[in-house]
Length: 271
Image (cartoon, rainbow, N blue to C red; front, side):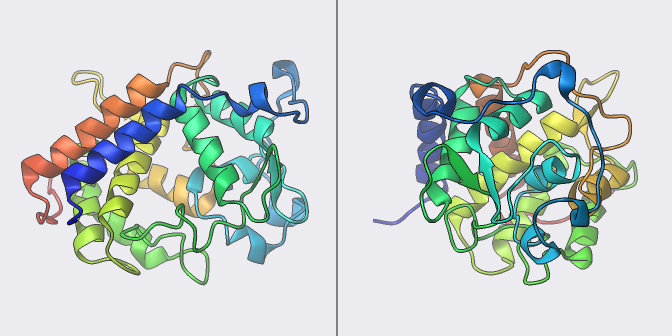
């Protein structure tokens, strides 16, 4: 059977919604305790101050996970294992509701991709050649070197003359990543990328005062993907507000933008 964008759209939606009906790692497993709110301390640290090597750090494919490690909010052991409870706590710090379907989806996906399987833990340096190492990606992090400045610069050009990378603009970048894939083309990978990028913009994005639209600047993009730290001026929300409905809404908005401008429209905006 021929796989279409529509088929994959409903597959992704079903996965997120189904995850919301499953038990969270905290409920179903015995896991290590997390750090209390009052003891959370942000410390931007060099990789050498963590328990993993530079080579292992470069195997982390998700910019959020890299930020968590560098900002001392995730503490992988010498083999790259992180407690699922700690990962959930990190997502909650970013504003993701701990009991939401999207939180469960993210953590459970990490547990399933980890090898060997370890109950209640995720190996964040071991996602190569798994479903999380998806095709049609930006290619910024999933390179042999662990980072590509040229591909980061390519993404930044979509910010346009007003220096604002919005969902509308990044939808065209995603179209390009699909039409001119880094490793191989994948419709499913493109949909995963759509979900990932919409989450990054919603969590870290600045808000336009008039339109209320969220966006990232080029400096924000550098902070997230290259420097592995929170964008300048970003602060954690007072309480988690990002859940399954918000994730689905943003995902639909991203897909709608891609459809509106055409799946093959990869031209960057000038404003």
